[in-house]
Length: 141
Image (cartoon, rainbow, N blue to C red; front, side, top):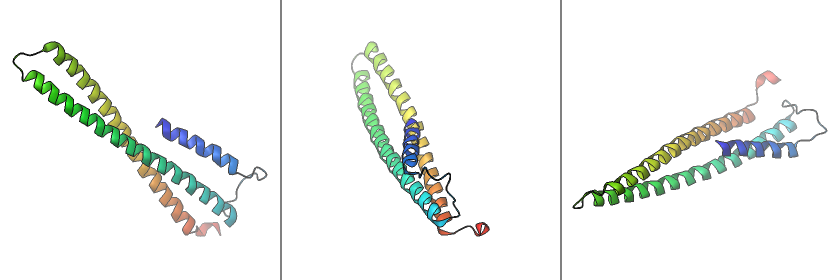
């Protein structure tokens, strides 16, 4: 979520650099201003969408690595517990480690869900903006 906020702040900074400061505001009923603002929004939203896609891919790869480590830990714990005698000290340490991994997995899962929800929201907003740019509002005439 912090990354999305940081990207939004970067968008605002870049938008402020592109704005014509001699204009008090942009008239969205004027075709030139409307096209400029819509194009700028599309560019920035596309950049943000690409960055969230890369972040989503990184989180997926990290989840796979954690799952591999968890599988290795489970097989090692199975070997220790399947031996002649139980080693309680190692077993408790592995259980603590397993609990930490599960905690990290749950945190990553919630972040992954939030990223996917934000990605879907961005796509829907971009679709709405495209429809507005393609089909002009008849009430503005």
